[in-house]
Length: 307
Image (cartoon, rainbow, N blue to C red; front, side):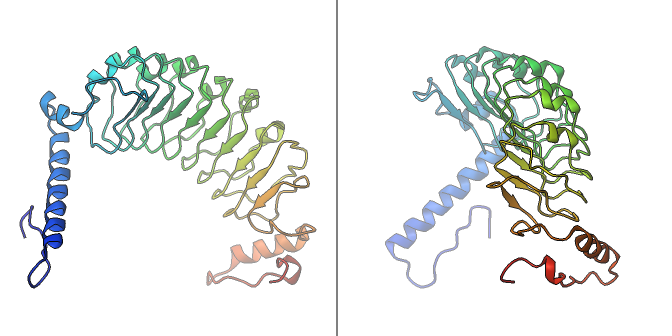
């Protein structure tokens, strides 16, 4: 079948079937044309992809996500009152300096693109509160990011970070940090300076020890260290603001102790009292030494209630 071929039902198609087939054909052609034109740098082709953006949107939001853009349409920078700009799921690896004209921007989504470095112009947008940088190819963040002192939420998950950039510790109003699915092995001690931080997501990294700095951050409400390589958890009972700790998919020998009312997600999370640490340790060692890789039965004192 050709590129624009459409599968029609057998027999004599009804009017509704013909209409459905025609709509499918039109949609297929439209998507293919958009994909093809994204590779062409000509201004007229890029204009086709954003042809409806000729005036400032009434809701002060522009969403160009999933348009397969390889260049940012510069004329969007004329919308000086823009508050939200979504550029997710494109093929961008740079941004024009004209973006700095959007000084009212509060939300900027650059996730699922091809950025190997954060464009410096982003660091000039001082009203930003939420910055999405996940699923790119970032190995570091520029020191100029510290200019964004209004930043409350930062997403840097699924990049190439081997350490948390020091500049993150200078974002004094940061409340939520998503840094999962990187290659982090530890966290900087300066992180405890972020007194407004309430939620930290670190799942899918290379942590072998529970980050010691988190023990000195009693204002944290959510800690996620799922899918790491942590073998032992210290007590978290002194973290007075803690509401949720996620520690599943770690080769841990124990569950972290928490204060009453704190929810735990992970092995032995529902145990009351805590499992005998000596038996837990023996069980963990037995699992590690198992040659056949088959799951072993938990000792009776480690089984959750009603199992």
